[in-house]
Length: 473
Ligand code: SF4
Image (cartoon, rainbow, N blue to C red; front, side, top):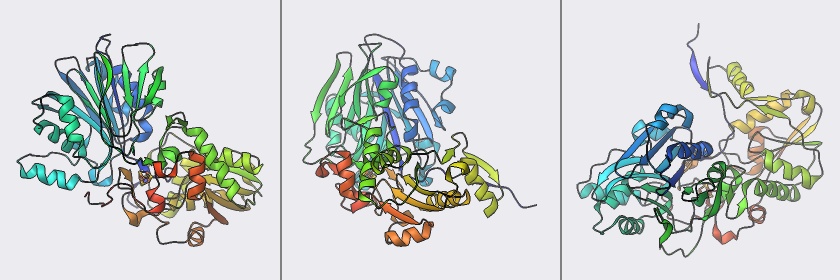
């Protein structure tokens, strides 16, 4: 009998966001904030599923709980009750294969001259190597591979007289993309990188007018019954304390470079980013894609789930009927299967099951958000053809993904990108589609309705808005 091996059931093939952060502060109302922070993390689960963590402050002590797994795996009722206090920050993380270690889970908590501090971070510093070398040379000892630890050390070493000044000074040393939240005994500090690459917003809880929230996405605010106030400005440092919130400092922001993939895929469809709802933007991308393409199809379907919003826009603009052609089982992660092709095919079927009665004999236009490694697209096309589709035409709601991201989005390795070094026609042949069309960069920008010069489009154009050395400098 062959050995059993663990086979991952493929998930939708997309670039992966590395983290989500949330912070809530409500000193005046003195409510226990951990249950709210938990719900905020739950709303941000799509931004990272490898680990989750929370640190709270009761004014004297920082309390922490973190671990590997999904938010509800790490936090049960007992764990939440063991986190007292009116200030909290939380983090969800997508670990890469290189750093899948419990030691890297966030938030990181330490004691310093500014009292107890905890930090949670989304993004990646592009001058990390230089900063790390400087810290090590000065005698610092590092335990993790995280940028968060570098930032905490820089803050702790600052000679400034108070924490907001020390954080503001540290931010001037950082290069790269970041959205970060820092908790002390009596405040939360929240900061966004000067080009506004990573998202971060400010909100207010309706049920508790004294409580303010910062979060990677507005869905964390609205899920708590809160109200979005505004986005944290590029380069801005906000302080949340017993006086409410205040803008503490603003780093120069000569240009903006908001990550276009937030709207294409990362953000939850109910989130508002750059004053625009992500679902409506995705529909608009689908419309642009249809207007730019030669459409030879009988029906339009979306690759579940992220292809569905652009598929609705595509169907509207092309005048073709939108159908549900594939059902995704959301409740499977890994299964134990023998490592042969038949079992791998079965693994795909467990995750994605086509509706043959919809597809049989049809020319199918299938819309997906992106092609990264190409394997899932090829599997999907085979699945549709096996279910009876006469032709499968693949339309992609982003331009060809040919350049790796160095700002905290995986994969960060160019060699993993199937479109790199291939023409669209070569790619079409490789994945087995009858035709393959991508939305253009200009079509994408039109749908986003954000000035092109205010966007990061580097993974499509190779024009990096921030220092792009993958080694970190
Ligand atoms: S390179 Fe791509 S994924 Fe990375 S920040 Fe820019 S647009 Fe987003």
